[in-house]
Image (cartoon, rainbow, N blue to C red; front, side):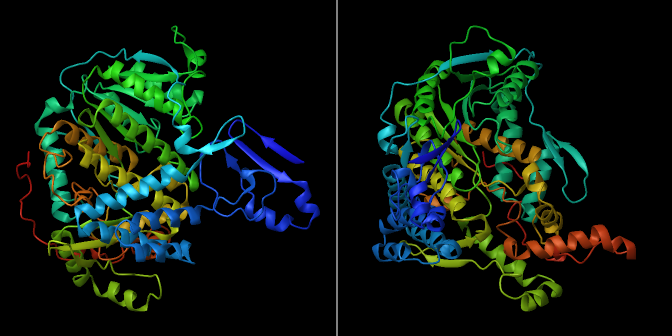
Length: 587
């Protein structure tokens, strides 16, 4: 008694009887497209029409449940408060911040919150099988046999000399381009650190990689890339440096044509990939059409393939696995949960001491920052020019909001500072997806894995620039010192440099043997290349509209009257650094 609309990924059920009973308006609100594979759990079965696919799978209620369980692990009263929140869409940022504050109290708290949150997700999420029935995600992952075949392609480009780190830097504000390498890259890194665009330990890490060129030879290193075609992933950096790449991405021929041909024609790297049939030397579309695996719909199969392929490729040596897949809305949560399972199970089967994890977080989140960063935020606000202070006074709700940090005392009596850069407009699904990454990072490092977790800058990807208002806001962001926006080619390269540092430098804080008692919430902000967001005097969400207005004025109106630049906060005084430009790296 239902009409089914099917394609390879989705199923939507529509009841005729519900419409006849006059429930069509209510049904439309609760019936949502249901995708095969990892899915949100049933929260209220308000309209039990046909089967569980018709139940209400509220992302808001699920997120509240997860955060409630995570926080209740250390504060049961506040956990109940989270579950009772009626305005989750607009108030979720308060609870995300509070979870960070609780984690900052002690390492024990941070670990308890992370474990409770991830356990709740793995236990409650559902899995839609292709035969139509629904089981729990944890039950689906008990399938340890189904897998893919493996294809391997070796690059044909001969290696010439020692690999060298090269970072393409095009200034988003002026358009000036230069290729940074060697001492020029070191000097620029320390200049950014002095200005507050990045942290000093981040500049130290970049300098260490440049000064140890042998680290950049990745011919003996293995990397698993979950979401290999991602705009922010390290595929191109690893390919150029000759790494052994185990690539996972969706089964679309166009994706695999680009990945495989990049390796084959333009590198000395090796790429291994999942296939639906045995690799017998196929080429062209005959090969590309059989490559790939969907991490959401075929999670157990992808997990099994990665688990079995890593020992064959890495041959007992350390392997680095990274999560880079990005999708919009609730799909971002689902794909990150799938990636989390793949990474967790690989670390457990291959060994935490031989499995490195890599994540790319976001600068627009809630973090615990150091005393130096907290001081910089307050100084930048105090030194902000008069026009900023006037707009701050007249701006109204949500406009020109100072970046006020919250200081709390941890269990050892030391001050911990919360920086709230969360963007309400990004939504609770995005925050939940990023929590998966933070929580797994905390637990994995405690279990003995090296974990590379460096905050990247705000990046002008093609999808961001396609939105004219976002592009305009980015165009005017430089008026708020020390913020700088970067292009995706730069972000790919520089985050690749920080990844190399973390997996190749035994003295990196990513190594669990270095500062093992460090509070995980403070460790998450080490080596941050945040693009100035953490030190800015104002929350970026509150200046975005004004930044766009200034950019549009300068670009389209100001030039008519001979006005090319409005006043900037760049005249503000800088806090002197403890290290001069070009200072030796910590390594």
